[in-house]
Length: 203
Image 1 (cartoon, rainbow, N blue to C red):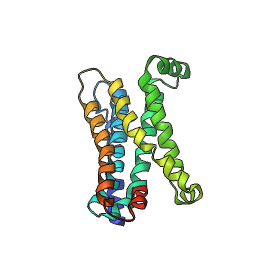
Image 2: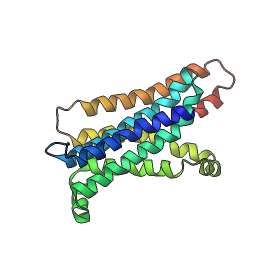
Image 3: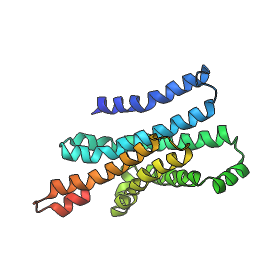
Image 4: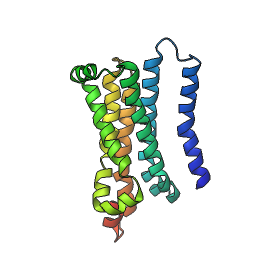
């Protein structure tokens, strides 16, 4: 498991090291700011998708070890999301808070993105096991809000790009597909079992 976690850390962290090196070498083309913001946003969506994939995949194929890395990927998702927003505020808006307020009014996709980040922040802050024990059932209820982020993230992406770009649509459909797969796996595993109710809650 340690080796697997190390590989996941490398898979999530090496793209950031590559981005830093590319910035340092001036290799991001004519609009490096937008490249950085987009790169970090895609990292958020990709790690979010991987996080949502773990539970149904682990349960359908009896790969229980995968459940032990959900927190790891969730924290990486939050890290990419926070860096995405920080890059937007620092490099695009140059910390102009009045301009940020104007942009929020003019561009609804920014509001959607900030809502998604607020949810990810709440999930990250409550991810430690000690907090999970203290919150009890409320913890699971809170962490189900990640399903909302699975929709808000692609919608934010869709509204922020020019029309005709199919990539956000693909991410939105993938997110919806992952959300639909979860109850399908749950029903398949619990069908005919006396402990069906408990198993559904676990998923």
